[in-house]
Image (tube, rainbow, N blue to C red; front, top):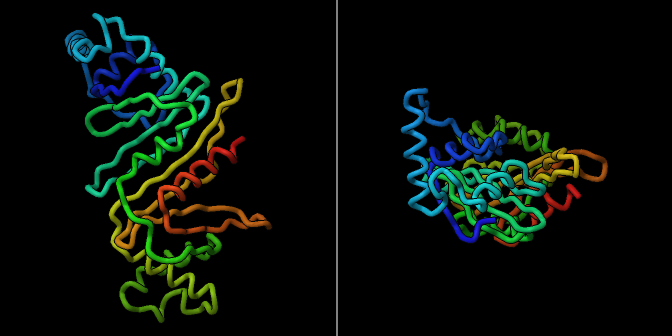
Length: 262
C-alpha cells in the first residue's frame, strides 16, 4: 500500500490503467477520459508518465508497485465504504475507502484529479466521515415515520411552502403523525447547503459483492446536519428515520451499514 498521500491527474490515472491492464474501475472513481486519437496517444501517454515521474510514482514507464496495489484494491475491495459528498460551495466528490487484511486506501475523485492516502484497514468509517465539511448537528428532535408517509409529505411540500397548508396531504392527518409530518415538511423547505450518501459493501472469497440495501444519507441545511436512514420495523415495513447528525452519530450509522453485511 501507499506510504503517504499522493495526487495524480485523471489522465495519469487512465494512462496507468491502460498500460497495466487495470480493467475494473469502481463506479465512484469512474469518469469519462479525454478523447485521444491513435495519433495523439503516444504524446498523451508520455505527458502522463512525465507527471508520474515528477511525483515519484513512476520510473520511466514503470509505475511504483504501491500505486498499482492501491489501484487494484480500489477496483475490487474486499471491504469498502463509498459514496458522494456535496460541499457547501456546490462542488462534489466521489470517494472509496477500501480495506484488506494488510492495509487500506482512501481515494477521492474531484473535477481535477484523484487523491489517494493510506489508511488502516479498521479506519474506513473514520476516513469516509472525515471527508465531510464541518457542520453542527441539526437543531431539533429526531423524526421517524413510514417511508410511504414521508414520500407523501415530500410530495405535498410545494403546496405547504407556498402557504397552502390547508390543501396539503398533511391536513388530513392527525396526532403524532401530523406533528412529525409538519416537522419533516419544515426541514424540506429549508435551504440546502450540501449533502451526500454513504454505502458499504463486502466481497466474499469468490468475489461476489454485496452492497447496502439502502444508503445512509445526510443533509446539510440551515438548521444543521441531519442523517436520513430507511430501516424496516419489526413487521418489515420500511420507515424513515431522520436525526441530528454529529460526527459520532454519522460514524455510528456508517459502521452499522458495514455490520449489517456481516
